[in-house]
Amino acid sequence: MARSVFPFVVIAGILAILPGCGFFGSQQRPPWRDAAEKECLARKAVRASAYVQPAREISGPGICGLIQPLKITGLTGGTVAFNTQAVLGCPVTEALENWLESVVQPAALARFGQPVTQIDSLGSYGCRPINNQRGAKLSEHAFGNALDIGGFHLADGRKIAVGGGWSRGEEQEKAFLRETHAGACEHFTTVLGPGSNALHYDHFHVDLAMHGATSTGPRRYCRPIIKDIKPAPRRDDLPDPPMIEPELEIARAKMRGGQTLAQAAMPGRLTTAQQIPGRPVALIGGTAPAPQARTLSVASLANSYGGSYGRNSSPGTGTLGLGAPPQMLRAPVPRGGMLRDDGAFVPPGEIGD
Image (tube, rainbow, N blue to C red; front, side, top):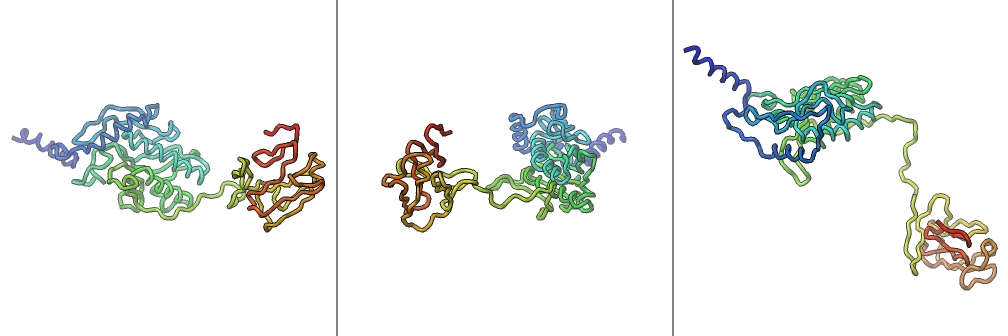
């Protein structure tokens, strides 16, 4: 009698150890999980390498598992290693690589002057309920859709642990962990860290759970909410950039007859208030005087290039009306030369570029 009862006791014990794994088909695998994995694999978002190796399908127990799990020992081409092999699905692997490249590495370089070379993984795939609580829903770990991160290693061997660095680390360590946590919320739908609950005091949990959709994308759950992050330290003695950069290009406006006129002044160019003897007056930018008729001496200009200026100019004098708006003003073109589109005069015999 004891022997006939023993197998049932063993089965009951196994079911107690693996609650929620759906041995009796009480749960159904949501269709979006397989669809997301197949789409990621079809795009080849994650490619096989010495650090990322496809493995056999994991089917069960229950609805746990992956179509094509990936055994990972490193990411971003092996530049960031794992302390132990992780088993993950394609979607979360792609999100991890994007997060490393766009958030983690820039933050590490800005704050420490060196990149992250290793991630300490505290858990990847595992068919278990959320927080290992009996009777709870299955964790995203049960679908290879989550990773627990305990810390980061820098190129010089320095370790930044989430548990110790979050509250007791140096100023830049604490800022780095908060920056990477906040940045993870842009790449994952669930991000939990110290302060979210008692079970995440020493690691980040990141996953791609489906929390629903919004008008701007998937709904995200990130705890704690990071508000203020200390800026990275200066890494040089160079001055801050100016608030306004000088104009680097010449704006052009069409004039009557298809001509163009430079509207913005560039460094070193003449304005309405500047004249150089022996050269044409350049009216580029600046503030024009009040509208009035103005007589300019053009003898030196004529001597420089030959000929006279203007239709009604007499030898030695020329009249330039300033009644038009400043952007419509243009110096007369000496005979025998040409005026380029950028406002520069090309003397006779020279080819403008």
